[in-house]
Length: 105
Image (cartoon, rainbow, N blue to C red; front, top):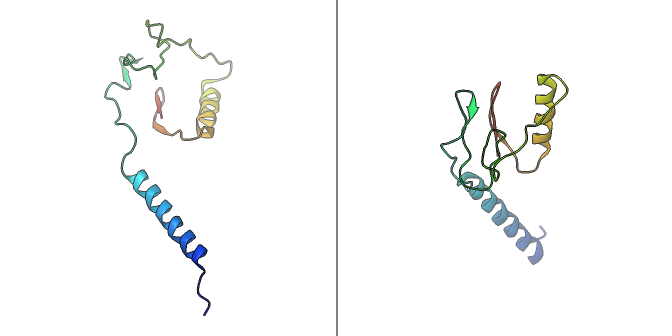
């Protein structure tokens, strides 16, 4: 029986180590905790926090304000197109998706 050479043995160790790191990272909750100010209240989105990574078409604060995204198709087609765009983005996932509200990270 032929023994693996030193390079193959080292390569196997590295592969196992990388796999272990990925598994630990994915199960350890490396993402930030979900804020408690997400969602709808009286059919309006809640205000953005002070952090710069939030935009809102209903915001009065210019740092967080974005113009509404207009579409010319039906709501169903617009939602499907938006869903396709979100799913095509790297490291993006849909956390909550219902009839009127989507939370995407």
